[in-house]
Length: 293
Image 1 (tube, one colour):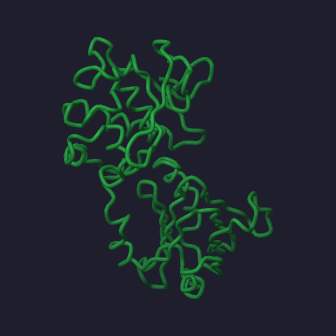
Image 2: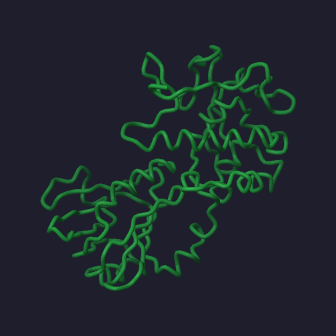
């Protein structure tokens, strides 16, 4: 599933549409008939990422944004940009919505969403009342981040495992499986430790490290949380059975939480099973530097 940084990159890619007039909207999905009828003639006013959610805002002439195309891509969805007549990289039967947009200089774009399981046409009022969008926690990539607010949200259910809690988009928006596993490894935190076992300084470092790495990954290229001479991009994610890059212990994977999400971890580095739920402090945290630092 795309995580918060991926959605910000998609929103940035689609920002070339802003200011353009919608010439046509096409969708085979039931429930989007009103969008097909009303979107032509409206202009694209903004593209916005909220955690793992994407909104393309539309407005009639002389009005503020009044409607939005809302998509949640989950594991299968993607957005593409094409010039008119260009060959699509995915089959047309996977198209969920297509926007034909003309900019003021005559440039035309086709923005095509493929295979998204969630595509909705929402009024601005419906966005505010939406059962998902209205309950999102603080966005990890928002211009300003109130860390104390996130800590307070995480502590609402202190018995919940930290590896499960930081994936709850109602508590903090944007962190998914990859970042969950990588960040807990970098900060040497046992994924199965209850939130109540972690002090505020530990949670603050975890949140700040999450923001740092997600912001680093807003540029071009594939996501990474690791640089080394062999080109490895992650420490533990999707590496079950491989030796830990820090201590050599085999990395493990366990399903966690009600949804059974995969959690990858090093039992030695992260002190899994230690009393208190943290690795020994003398082991310290992993110091990770970006390229060129």
